[in-house]
Image (tube, rainbow, N blue to C red):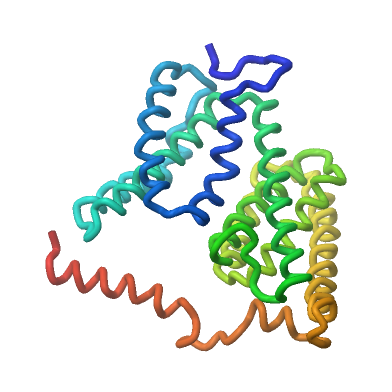
Length: 289
């Protein structure tokens, strides 16, 4: 017996899954991280119990998900070397929770359930993106954060939503809502000024074409080209309209300053992030075990 049966009404478990996937990223940025850890400690065992009670499903190809399992195992090994066991345990628990949610969606959801889940996430993401765009237009023309406390996690949140939406765009008959949602989400992604998120988006974008029939490829690329043209035009209009609407004067290079900024080595976060690896390597050499 599958977890979700074919019914006219939406299964309440699917609604819970929608809320967890759609709102967890916001809660993590709005609430104290300790609260998230405690919630994870409670939710993971309950989710395991739910899955163990009903393991029948559509099947789960272990070979295709080998990198995911390698990530889980390597993350678990960090518990032996961490300098803050409580925080590392909390993060590891959250990672397990995400894996269980992914398993639940991949194995137990039917196509109609998946369509509802994707639609909910895109609607929620569009609303959050719109909040950020409006704040850019009417409050301050700076890197947008919307309901997040930092533009970088907001950027990667939007990048994942955008990729999911573009994958749906080239496989289904695109609706006006989907096109509008993708323009809003991708506009907001650019306005976060998160270069890491933009690089991740560009590197991951070719994945959406996997298993796409060759006879559809050329036509879909044309449609995507039109959509990206709309994104470019709308972002440009937003970037030059914001200073005017806030009476700060005409600033033609606002978008350039927002995304590129000062890209010298010392001013970027790359140097700081590489220092984590350097410190870790020095700790390994000092005490290998």
